Length: 603
Image (cartoon, rainbow, N blue to C red; front, side, top):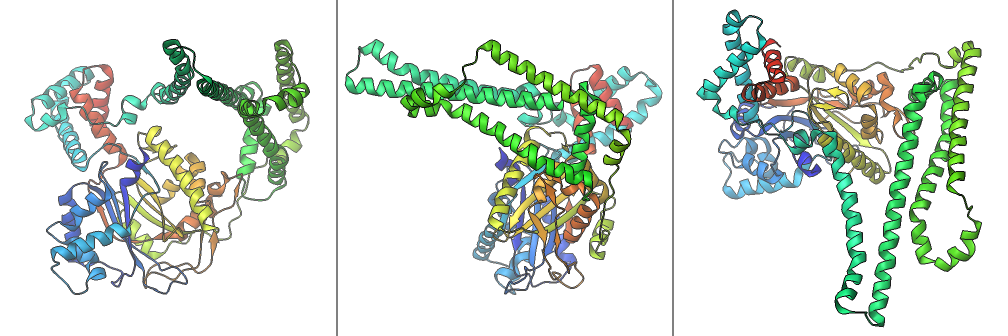
């Protein structure tokens, strides 16, 4: 499932670029014609990556970014591009294969294809905003939306404010138009954006997996008994096998429900800590908010330091103790099965024997203790309001320098001001690089899974307007490349991530840094002084919440593009609106669809 998402976003990093900082106009036109004709590429961009410090070859690498429709293997995509009759890929990469050859032979094209395959990198993690849409579908739905708005203006005087009649008239017009016969089929949707979009469907998978696991254990446990019932009591070897199967399945069964119970208790404690207690006690709620603020605070104030030290002295040991208890409880049946005599004779006599009434009493006492702590905190807040106000004073961010925008990057943003924006970000992995690469890949798989299963409507967390965002670990695990195609402007784009997807963004970049590097070519940005990603606390806190430092870090990492292709030039909202109009016009007549039609023509 994640492989499908990752294969939609491909980067080709070709080392040893000997060309200039601009592509010729014939090359641009050939690329435009190629990508329009192939008609499976949503976005394409070309840029130059500076050579790494210490590399013998000081030439930059040519980067080609491709965001394509779902379902294409990279080899199939590259084959289409290389063997297109226009030869645009040869014009771009041919000099790296065989210099001074204008018309390549079939063997040279195959050589280029093999080279591109060796240079290509599918995304280590990515997010697709307008899901399940082909380039052709977006264009056709755009035409449907535009023509429907024209027809709506013609019908406005006839139907006025009668929304139901107005929507019905537009639906009849669309049905009668032979050009829209394709729209009678509902717009395609993947499982997670269609039938699997509900929370029930998402929960059904883990529940089904648990049920199947217990069912499998039951079947394995019953097999020896079924054999005995059919063929009679087994001999000595058969009894030993039956005994081993029985003990193993019973041990696995007990471990499984122990593990489920431990997870359920941890989930309940987290829920109790974060939901009922803050709702019941304002002081508890304020304390939680202040802890979150202090962990994200970029300056070392007294309150921030106290929260940090308290987290290490109380929070981390408490979490480790809970995890240790959960693990011990889960694997206790295994220890009992491996050493039953030792458990009976040594460990069991030392374990407390508690009745159900005693366990219930302990739970009640614990709840009362928590409530008393909350009440005490509330009283202290009331009596020491001045000290409390001083402790929780608003944060001030200390930034050594403002954002520095290189003129080449600024020109690229200005060129795209009326369309979908784009960015290249190149950073280095922090040492040890193998460890940073592993941590980043784990974080990116989580982000990719969340985007595929939960955030299916063009929002990643609370960050809207992302068409294709993808991350690549390149240069043998030494550098980290981020490519994004997004709506709006760069400042608002980063604000959406800071305020809406801070944890995922911090996880994606916390193992990176900026090393000094020379510009790829004259007129392109370089880095004079090393920079580190804003420091984090407990893996996911601070980081991007150091807003100005993070924006400065992001700006310093950016590279300009030499070429840009946008197949549809539509925002995510416009794409979703056109798809919704298609389904509403040709779906059943109800108030919901009527509202969708009116919203589409009035937007």
